[in-house]
Length: 255
Image (cartoon, rainbow, N blue to C red; front, side, top):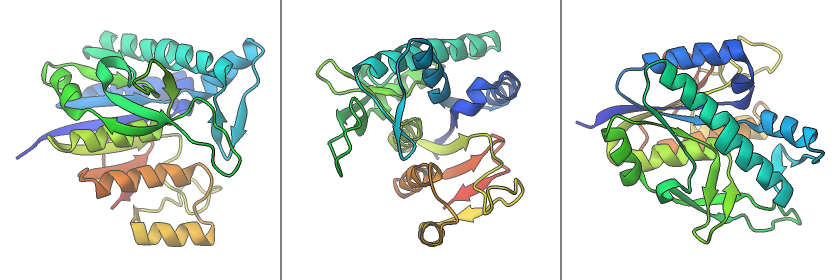
């Protein structure tokens, strides 16, 4: 029987809210057994970029990462956000280590090709994740804290979607562990009606997702999040939940 491991991806809105973040980290520290934290930080990156006079450009909710923005996200994701989370976890007795995909060659990507006339710049699409190397750290009692940055193996850092980082990390670890992946964000789950906080869809399958997408029930930034969640399930991840709480009992279950 495989040992259980919990991977929690925390969204930027929670990272930016001190009260919500404190509660999430408290709950995360209380999780028994092996665990991994994956974080975003897009809102902080946008703020820092504005302070530096760098314009943030978005297409369909995805950030265009030119050379200047790459410097910002590297500093914010790999430094400011990541190390603050590590420090807070250490203060709560969790032996955390902040990582990007470049560290120990854990996640390698290639630069996203231009498609439909859109050049996302220095954005990475994941090629492979090294679950064995990450597992060595975990078996030593280390809790990895993963920033949404990868590399191309040729010396270049690439900005990579945090939901994808979580999914790829879960898939890579599923070979050795019984993985539960939790996408924690500001909503209670995937909502049928975005104006009704209690309209949580309890279960989403590949078939129902297709229907929800076609009729417009699910749209925007939730689409790639669910795609990542479904990809994880289809690759052998045991359980995926989208919710605010990380207790595994609430939210939307992806099957």
